Figure 1 (tube, helix red, strand yellow):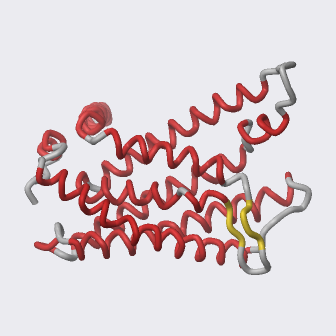
Figure 2 (cartoon, one colour):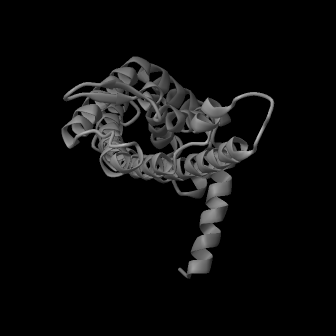
Length: 248
């Protein structure tokens, strides 16, 4: 297939996906990615071997949305929505930055500008870590589902695939982000403030465990959503287009 034909096919497939996928899940996913980026600016806890940033409070929602999309539409669709969420996040950060540099004599907006103006290396780290971990999570989730063969629609298959992929994906996300920001850039731009690699690893592990607990708590909701989508043949046009049986 020529590159032009492949590109046109991908555009058609993406447009079809965006038309078929329920907007509520996409909206929650995009909002969670934007909030995760903002909350990551604050360190909630820093001990000798443990450190946590604010992104841990919302990142579980991003992974749960990816699990739902992967289960019903497949990993490729979930990867595309992840790229869309990152693009919207970048656009939002750009608008925030423009707002932060516009002068105003109405009041002192130093703190507002500091938060919403953002930090370029946090945005860079967040984008790299999120896209990498999203691809890992989606591929793992789909691969684990495949091992259940004719029982892919059961609760056990959904739970195991979601739990394992979320834990590994979250650990990778947290660790990569922490290393890039708090080991690589923070010592240079934040007056020597930094985390050790051990703190990054324990932060990633602690965060992954906490987010796994959230996944366990809310996974019944995710399973019910995918079950309802399957019963109502949600996105059947897209599934038929990519050659996937929506009745599986």
